[in-house]
Image (cartoon, protein in one colour):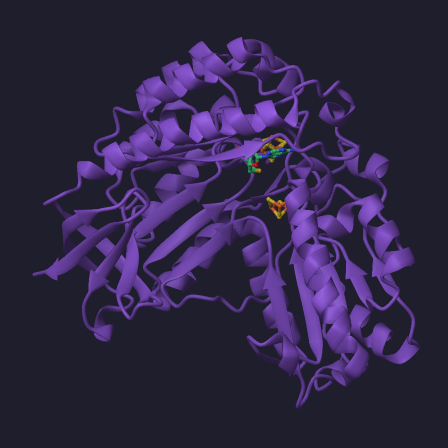
Length: 470
Ligand code: SAH
Ligand code: SF4
Ligand code: F3S
């Protein structure tokens, strides 16, 4: 048993990051462990987790398990969890309640919790004491060892907990079963060293470690060969890519080299304003296949709150960067904002509204501050009443929605390029523009997986309607 330890997880040393190509092994006797058995995996949280689930699926399939999308049919049920805010927790424990029910009548089912919540001491304590029927718990650094963890659980009949609280290495031989045949997530870095005072990610994901350009570019080349149209380069702070490598190679260089592979669309997320350099902006301008879309989290518009958050930029610096980004032709910019950070006054909040008014974002994810155990902000005096936080969120959303709608209006009557992804619930096709606008389209199934020209015929706040034109 290896329990999480937040103090350990916080440590950052100068220890060299190792590139490991042999850690993932499925022993001969485990390759058919899942024969005739099904797995179900439910994913919470960010794209990083979605991509981890793609790895977990491939690992389970290496053991002959088959995927099902009905948890009632599964022999293995995994919850890949997110720890970013309290409501993420509540959702997971809610779903565990339903799984418990099923387990009472189907005791052979193996139930597991993994992902960022598994890295939290209090969560694992709770699972150990109150959810003894959960069979396995494994952390974000332990995915490669899932075959052995599963086997131990099946043979030992006791709760298997394996959560390393380490800085982490880069594992290069983990298989992947991608959810889409056209769009792919590609990790370019893991972890985060920014330690924004409210955020749990540096504790759940370890230190910032970039993959080497060779591995990334080869992965993209392979995707191009297999007919993929779009890659999203993933990291908590993609702009800081390469800073931990011992070569002079940064995000701008990587963007250019990925663009040269000929992949039709390149996206990247998330960008921290701190590391956004001119070279990156120029790379976006220089290549048509680097999408003109930037997610640039603001968090707060108040210099005082930004300082308490440890974001290392001021309102003015943010706006300067924003204005530079706006020079990218046809760019769309979205953001994340937290309201009700400890000590946030009405004046602080007005500074946030001021930035939103100035930037007129294409869209924004807005959150109420949620204290995360073990982070500095959780110890700050949280003196903003909940009612006030709700009211601020409401006022903020009103303005965010107004600008989202206004930005969408510009598309009416225009013809845009849409990568058609799939069929929606109402039988329509849907996909995204270069600027990451969701478009619902009438059209034939054979357009799925293609980039088509779509004339926009109607506007909603969060999506566009259109028809395919030649
Ligand atoms: N690496 C990204 C953010 C990843 S988390 C970045 O730095 O921009 C996604 C968003 O969740 C954050 O941008 C922030 O707005 C929000 N968030 C993170 N921790 C939070 C907390 N404790 N309470 C409320 N929102 C939080
Ligand atoms: Fe969290 Fe800040 Fe790192 Fe983003 S940059 S993951 S908000 S610590
Ligand atoms: Fe959540 Fe972990 Fe992502 S906390 S947002 S799943 S890195």
